[in-house]
Length: 322
Ligand SMILES: Nc1nc2c(c(=O)[nH]1)N[C@H]1C(S)=C(S)[C@@H](COP(=O)(O)O)O[C@H]1N2
Ligand SMILES: [Mo]
Image (cartoon, rainbow, N blue to C red; front, side):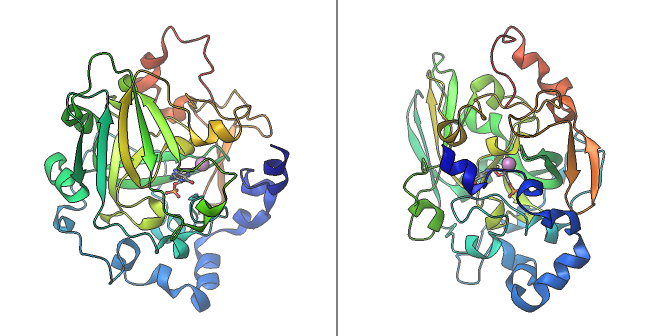
């Protein structure tokens, strides 16, 4: 595990580099002007390359905004959010947008299996058509003490659970990201526990906040954000929000996640946001709002306690925080 500490790849950017301190829109545009035209090309290029098959559901985006979920801060600038990502399949810096364009998002088949009435596979476009699309504004708090605010489009995960028809004995859902070394160089690093895995209890998965995002910023979701479908669980640290999902398996065993496997002393299953419980190597009391150059106190459950605190009643003895 020492090797991980030395790499420093899961340390807050502030420990690794002062970069984010001057990460504002002007600096970003200047930095990108010469090189990364791709990232700022017409908006659609971020979601799909010209060579990709078109998204037949593009007309469904952004969907009707669900006004129930409100922000206490401005939406993070799209160009900043789309150029400051964690997607270790591609590389372990924040600059993965360009490499992530290699991800082929059509055709994209999702497997639903495990403890369900009948396992099945469904193509992403059928799934989106069946589930529909709405827009929600959510905050996102990375365990590295930075945050963003995103207009996601997609559907509540409860709809997918309903389609899956899990057996009553199933208690967890395990999610898995694609595995393809030929496009994702990070996956060539055999010492990392690929594929990326995450898990939720079924009660969490069917909570009204739990969202499967297939779009962001008014259009199909950009590859670096986890196209064509990623999880958004805003009361948990960002690593729970698994990207580019290919499989949902229902089970009665608690899934072991990627970060837990890598470093269980630092990352657990529940990973709920709590400013009072520091990460072993840094404080979680406050967060940097990326792109705004502003720090704010972090809120318990990232401010979503009214929706989710009841999920954890009776579990006080568990490690509920990352
Ligand atoms: N498959 C996969 N999912 C992932 C990650 C990853 O490396 N691989 N990183 C996680 C982390 S740590 C964060 S903070 C968010 C980042 O999402 P964003 O890049 O869209 O902001 O994705 C999460 N989901
Ligand atoms: Mo994160």
